[in-house]
Length: 127
Ligand SMILES: [Zn+2]
Image 1 (cartoon, protein in one colour):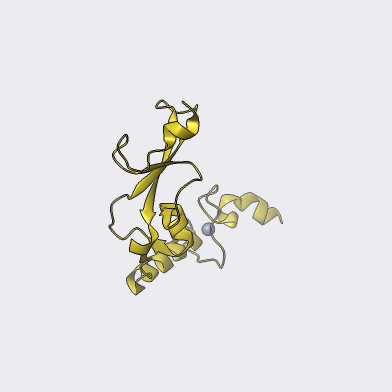
Image 2 (cartoon, rainbow, N blue to C red):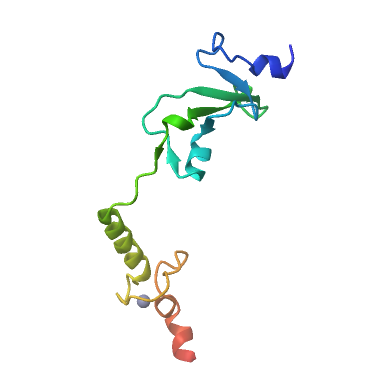
């Protein structure tokens, strides 16, 4: 049996849901990521179908991606002002040095965990 035939089950009798070979998904279906690129989300709909390909690295031997119906998808919810507020706070925290509490116009390097003058006080004094 060829790979194509092994992964081809449009009626879903073998896998429970309609299954197509990788890249042969019918029109009107999209993966979660493809929906996201269109500014859509599954919106609570169940998985409508799946695409499958053989994958040597996996224990099951196959890689599966779930497909959703594009006509049932909903637009991605716009960010609420509350979320924006939380984001702004998070950004502010990333720009504030935990050592000297100074807020910079740039993000504190995560590798240092503090601002550059705090991380290298000796070098700053020498310069
Ligand atoms: Zn600092």
